[in-house]
Image (tube, rainbow, N blue to C red):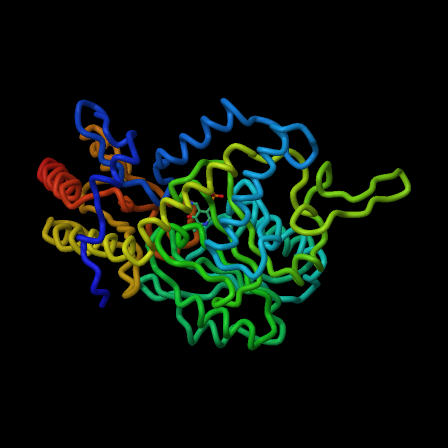
Length: 412
Ligand code: PMP
């Protein structure tokens, strides 16, 4: 148990960073519990974005004028910041993408086209987001590789014995999420990676949900690839990264062709740039990449340990209260969970519940959460999902539970 308590979190100071929270929705104070879909953007991030567009807007890497130098320097400063945030060996191992989805597509397409062949096996889990399923299906179609699915138990935990059984010399890649967006399960990722390595498989870690909650250290994890999205980390939309170890990135062919990713172009042939630029064709989301640095500063200023301790407190507090509401059924009860609560309410359809909560100013997610195969396994169409961030409070949870209680009474 961590010794850290809520005293380590200055909630007033944190909330001051999110003016968006200080508003009414449908005449009620906004309660934002849809953080697993996207978190709100910290003020220092928004300020950096405005500053870029008001003062420094220029394209990167290609200009010698002052503004181009400024924007290039700030852009590369974010690469350095990500390198420190996830403890990669080098900053060059960080590739900017639009987000986790694009990062996984890059790996499935580019790495997959060279390294997957007929009969090879791709292992993914039953818990995956569509963006860690469909790119692999496309890769399998192109290459003749086969997808195998690691089963889970009813609590939403990966069955490690089944995983071990599935691993073989045929396993070419293991692609799993660190934290499930639908259920909040925190997977035993280090063990999953170690076992994959022992079988000579490449590893692709979807850390979209892990990044805001869990300290990431790619050298300690020893993964080959890892993807995350800025917008789930209090940063801007349209930015994410793919981490890849230098040797594997160098061996991987380019993803898209265009400017920036080349050394020399002629009609008789083209030579490609070094990593990371080889994978960064065209003009990226420059301002958003620059602002993303401040999101990582925001997280590190609070500290992952403090964030996790506080969010765990919120999770436990909410679960205690929710269990007392008649008809509440949690979906996903893994022993090791992030601050995500998926649930069903007897007699109330998730969609209706989502709408009725919105009337009370409470934002939750309803539906399959881009995990249809997981919903099929659970034999449900979808859930209601409340997911907490570091700016949420117990008072908000009280209001949420009161609202649920009243809705349930109406539907009795
Ligand atoms: N994987 C997981 C586990 C996610 O939660 C999400 C976003 N819901 C994604 C991948 C896709 O991320 P993005 O939409 O930012 O590309």
